[in-house]
Image (cartoon, rainbow, N blue to C red; front, side):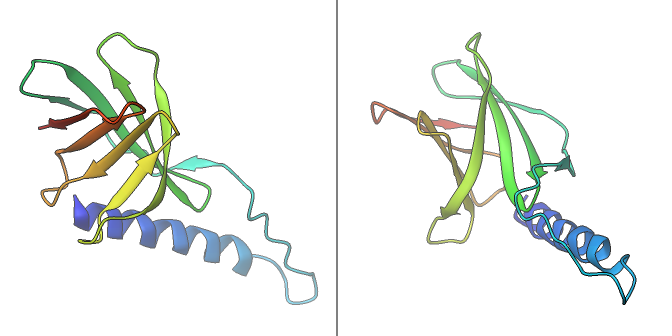
Length: 122
């Protein structure tokens, strides 16, 4: 999955470069850095923890940002945006209620809620 994130970031960069290079030399390049176009959406993955709880995660690019949706059990879906990386370089996603830290294998991860409860999902 770590390789998928590198590929995802490269595609997002190439797409943004391609959009800018498609303008003519005489026209000014106007880049909308606030564009939130969803692209490179990956297949949803269902993960479980040792308590039998399930989450469904879907990773995608939103403009130039990496993002994901997370749905835990029967709760409403949350959209989390990558806000940094852990010491190993994997992205950490958050929405202020949940934080998702991707593990080395690129599939599993640690979910932390607003109260500080941590669960490992595989």
